[in-house]
Image (cartoon, rainbow, N blue to C red; front, side):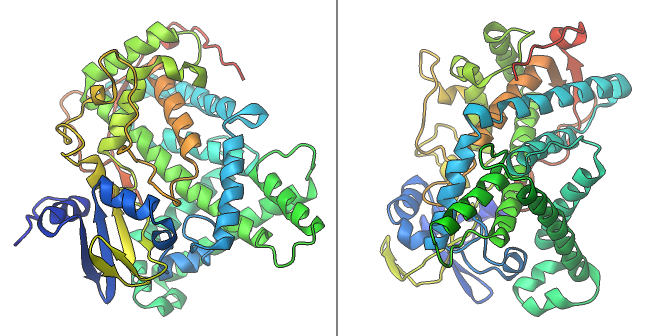
Length: 469
């Protein structure tokens, strides 16, 4: 039975195939067997109820060449991964609270964005601006502060170089002839074109990060860890003091963890913020309603804080509804079976690539009413209180769930409330709205768009917003 493919994204096609072949079906990519999991019940059963079977990662040559199967995101499932992830998860949670909280850092970045938006508003007016570079800088600086202990000025040459290298490395791996490395790994060593460029990008990123790790080692104060690198170096020392032999905590492993944090923490959060602004522009009535709630709860002269989160249910519901409709990693990152298993009436061999279709869960008509419609109210009860729904899983599910979930939620909440407190965003007059489909790379990004920015009263009257650092 043919499946309609016209003008549909790959994710939509995979989701529609489930209507024909069931929620668990297989297909071949070349000679590789892949099993696609669709719908909430199937994903929960596989990833939450059978994590020992479904949490491994496939060996994808282009990724393996870049990550050496180390770090957290792309590393294979096993005791080394569990120890490293446990450490990183606990450390990331520290950045959500106490003296290491990243809230002041996020607000500082938003202060910079506000200044830039005012400047661009005066400069560009009705012509509109591209919000992507501003958001990328702010999000990247949060990762820099957390991992490397330093913020960079948005025009800092070294910072710009690092961001460009990371972005270029990803672009080459995902959208260039370098994808052929996955079929013919020896192509990586070709002395020309994108293959040569990829090796140079890898060398440059390595030099940059290893220089920063060395500086941390030389200035380490065990009583006052500044960031994730310090905390990792202290864990290395603790394991050495305890006589741990063959510990996986090494500077080499740390290097790949930092790379993971940039790759996993920049693109995803940036695109989430850009999707939310995009929907606010498409639905000005919802934007107005969010702004009214922010005005009533926070006012116009106080910077938003995480303590306001519980008092802004409609704002929260709006963020969640955009995340539901635009899962930024719609097919998660491929999993792999670590053993042969019986699942949903099928025998799935060891080493099978598993594609968890998160998109299908968020568009499932059996759990969502009119799933293709934008409706923040679906996350509110009749009294206007926020509803938690188990089939809302923008950060994944199971052992491979996003370890930066708490940090990402903090960034999304503070960025969206701050931007909508200070500015109104509209489409430039006379321009058609950009396509809703977005673009697929490692994440689902909105198509580039332009917005007109109008300062609201707190910003335009020159009043300073109080930020409690």
